[in-house]
Structures are given as C-alpha cells and as structure tokens.
Figure (tube, helix red, strand yellow):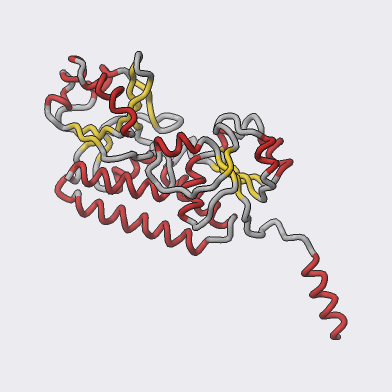
Length: 287
C-alpha cells in the first residue's frame, strides 16, 4: 500500500504541468493585456510598443518588460527567446502569425470587437479568461467589483444629467489632414455612458467602435447634446488646429458651449482600469 502511494506521488511530481496550469511567463501583444496583468498583480515578460502605451494609456503598468517590437508585427524571435508559457493576442492581430505563435507557447486569443453585442461585455469576458489563465480568478473578480462600484458612483454623480446625450470623440487623421474619431453605439465607451444614465450622442455601429469623420460631420451633434473630447496632452497642438477653425466654431454643440475635455490621458480601448478612469473623468467633466 505504501509503495503504491509513493509511486503515485512520484508520478504526480514528475508529470508535466497540465494544460490548465497557471501561466507565469506571459507575452502581451496588445496594451489591454499589459494593463490587465498589472491589475491582476503580474507583469508580462514581454510586451509590444510600450512607448505608445505611455502616450495613450493612463492606467499604470509594470516595468522591466522586454520589448517585442510593434503590436502590428511583433518579433517572433524575441518572443521565442523569452520562453513564455502563454501568449495573449487579440483576434485582429493574430491573422498573420498565429501558427508561428502557437509553436512557441499556448496562445490566448481575445475578442474585443465582437460582430454583435457589447464591446464592454466582451472586455469583461476577456479579462476573466486572462485571470483564469494566470490562476488569479478571485483577484480578477475583485477588480470587476471595483469597476461595478465605480460605474455606480459615477452614475450617482451624474444623476442631475440623466438622459443627456453625449458624443465621445478623439483626434484622428494627421496634423496636415485632421479628422475626428467619433465613438459609435456599439463601443465600450458608449456602453459606459448608457450605464451612467446618459444617452448616445452619435448613432450607428462600426467594427472597432468608432467612425472616422471630417469636422463637418460633427454638425450632427445637436446643440442640446454634449461632446466629450478625449486626447493625450501630446495631441494638444493637433486639437488646437481643429478648434481654431471657423468650421469648428460654427458647430451647434460648440456654439452651445457643450464641449468638455476629459482630463489627462484616457484610453477608450482598455480593460477595467481604463474603463474606471473614463467613467470617473466623464462624470467629473459633465457634472
């Protein structure tokens, strides 16, 4: 009997980890994974385009990660050298190199922009999948409870603004050919607004939750609506080039003085932490 138990114990100790073993060496190919791992108390061993992250994403991130190149074309050689036990990549960035990545390590493919349904709900689903993959489900649920509490608090702050229509925009295009990214009804940002008791100030859906339009298209945002402008400080000059034009000054929402700029860097494609920052800053800008 003792020999049988000892043999079973020895086999268990020597057996390779199962497919459901918690990942410890994670490579992040998109910024939301970096943010989410940080909220789960982990740091990826490698990540893409951290300079861009620091420009656009206000959520804190871990330090000391190895650079794996760009998000669009990460270096397969650098990823392999890190010996990851999990690679996390969104479906829209996995079309070219998914098979190569799978030869290096198990791959968790996220789906932030579903063809149907809520992009905010998709974010929550992907966050839970990541938490499970790294063995931190309980911590993940605590983070999601913080998100729920933040949305409830922001909704309470905006109680007097309930039912107001709000359009969310960021700068797009280039300095010489400026454009506006306006967030559509299926975006996570619009979903957050609805959960705060507000209404969409822009109609329609788009693959990634925003439409790129010319300045004149903002005439669709009525004088009774509000426009929340979201951009990092580095884009101040480009935004100023838009707001100084006579076309901008003639917009109904501008003439009504219903334009608000969200403070700081607010990333509208992130995880729970970025979503909390957006909700808090939107409530502060509109109340």
